[in-house]
Image (cartoon, rainbow, N blue to C red; front, top):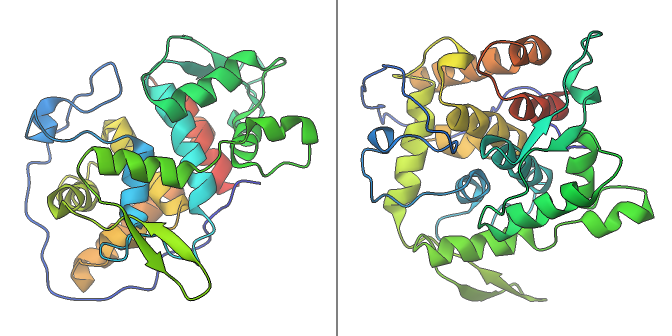
Length: 286
């Protein structure tokens, strides 16, 4: 089962840091699923995948590892992989049909077998390509996480995902690699080296539900919409909201709850949507 996050996020620290005012005009998306360079504000800015962004939000800056108590991020990262493949046009959801089957009952289909250039994405894409009959989003999250009772599906598990993503962040200059001793064992950690990238990510998440809030999920950039949903499912959204003032925190959480309360099947039927994105969100919200 895909891990889910119940209720709101309540544990936080409060201070008086205010969120900067920004232009709330709608931003366009390019065909690859990445934001336009105008939205990035810097064409040379390091681009991260959804998986890398979720891990970066979850990593402790100095310690370089995620919380030992977070049992949601593993399946959340697999959800990110499916959404990435959907945004990049590699997979799609089968048609709803005349009976309007729900998102959770529709299968993931191969749309374009061309490699993405990302090792994790291409590994998942290869599994989807070779699987007959096709499987649902819920099933793929379980298979890629290794959380299945079917021994024939265990070969689909993506192993060492967090460590592989952390190495990507090291290669992109965001983190470094160290060894730490935890009394009974040694662990490889990845402390932050470039705080600007993480701060820009946190600021974008905050602004998406504050100064740039559109009050309409379909006017939000798809990648940011997916990031908010998956950060919540992965139990790392609190890390982005913790620096907010009390008032801004309450507003941000209210708007996240509005997104969580949407009817995902209805949202997926609107024009210009990405069915894979909404199916993953539905899988974590059941």
